[in-house]
Image (cartoon, rainbow, N blue to C red; front, side, top):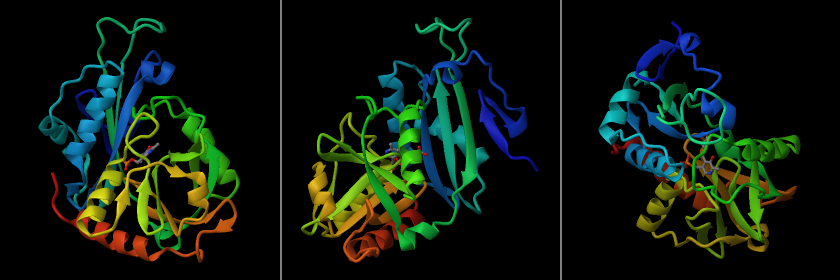
Amino acid sequence: MEKKVYLNGEYLPLSEAKISVLDRGFLFGDGVYEVMPYYQGNFLGFKSHIERLNNSLAEIRLDLPYSVAQWHEILSPLMDNTRNQYIYLQVTRGVAPKRDHLFPKPTVPTVFAMCNDIPPFLEREHGIKGLTIADNRWARCNIKATALLANLLLKQQADDEGCGEAILVKDGYVTEGSASNVFAVVDGVLMTAPKGPAILAGITRDIVLELARANQIPVSEQAIPVTALKTASEIWVASSTREIVPIVELDGEKVADGKAGAVWQKMNALYQAYKQQDHV
Ligand code: PDD
């Protein structure tokens, strides 16, 4: 059976879900999105994801006042509670009568959601390679915008060099990954860039920090100098779909002994236990 997706109030087979070529998401990348993990019947961080979506919507001045409960009602029918899945949810500024940079009046947002299986994370145990690249994105990275061209180019550049993630550097400091947040263990302290317009503050990032604080792992929400990254004992990237992945090689040099480190082992175990619990 073909999978169903949600589009503007309807549940449709994927091949029947159609939008206009005048949709501003298509023409301008004028929209925002969320990616939420779902483990065997439970969304992880649902409320936090919806709060971040609302923040993105407010930042782009798009009004869509659905409550957390309404979103839950919309998205739940897409999920299969026997599988590990993630939901992709996108809201654009909808269809306008013609291509015009200014916002249409009235605005009727396009709301689209689909669900996919989370693939098994073979990479997690072995780690991946990272490549530092200059962060040349815009100044409002806190908005989870669908316009991801800069991120795509950076990720592709890393992949071209055989690396699983681009580690982005601005003014000598690590901001984040092309599709993840970056953590490093420096002198025994787990560091990650502070929230602000230079990063998309991940829900996974929040969970990692919460788990670290509850389990006596010293943390610092302070930007990581790239010089400190080069001598870090551990580097990780974190996101909803990849969870927490060790970077075992950076710019062609091993990170410590080139294996997932002890702090990662501890955090990964905490995270795996946490995701099995019921959360709002
Ligand atoms: N991206 N930073 C960027 C630039 C991201 O694209 C993502 C996730 C994150 C981590 O956020 P979270 O922990 O809430 O997933 C940080 C998603 C997974 C994506 O674009 O598919």
